[in-house]
Length: 307
Image (cartoon, rainbow, N blue to C red; front, side, top):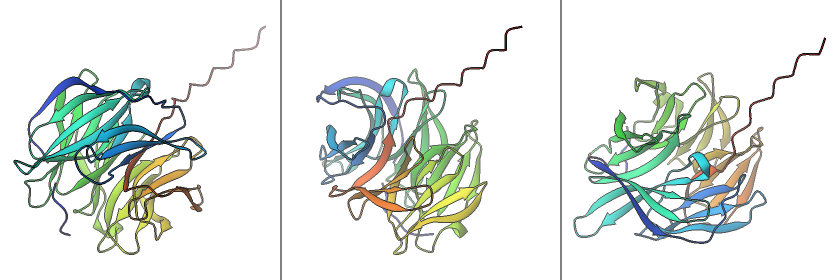
């Protein structure tokens, strides 16, 4: 097990408070990226990219933004963490941003916490990772917030939790970087190991997670000089891309995989065969990614022929 940065958890409360508004236009098909920026309070922001790579600042004045996920109606939820210089502690919150860019504080997580991955299930429940900055092993808690704002503890991770993703059966996959393990949680919160340390290199571990339309899980591997993106098909591991240090992962409607390269300050695009191109560059520390995708309408049944 590796030593890692400590950043997490305790009491939480729901609040709704207007923060401000910035004219913006979140559009279906666009890519949204959380940007750490200089790393201080209010120094982070969200970039929006059109499919042809045109960049726009969608939301400013965020603090160490990490996980991004879209809820119903096209509202973007962001994991946000401020630092209290007086007490030397972190404070986690969830900010929701409407399509016009207006920001509202949706939830706060009490205690010395650092928030990372976000994900929604099909019922509209929001799940988030909170890392305990008081824990010597950066132990993490996964919280659940229902559409009505009811909070509960869903599960725990032994080490530093990062990315989250749901499979088609409603199981939640969670990346535990320092434990070098991807854990699977059934809808009732039962935890099992999906992929253990043997799947990762000696100084590597899972960071970002994303499922493609076929149900294959993709995981970015961090903190190794020969980092990779791994693909798991029915639990069987293979290398999808090598030599790329990506964090957040997301798929577009066409099945292309996008990865945030924190070190190079780029967003990379991979076709289904693993071919890599640079989608955007010159970005100050991109973290997590999310596409604003409209739900696919159900197919219309073919009417029976008339007699």
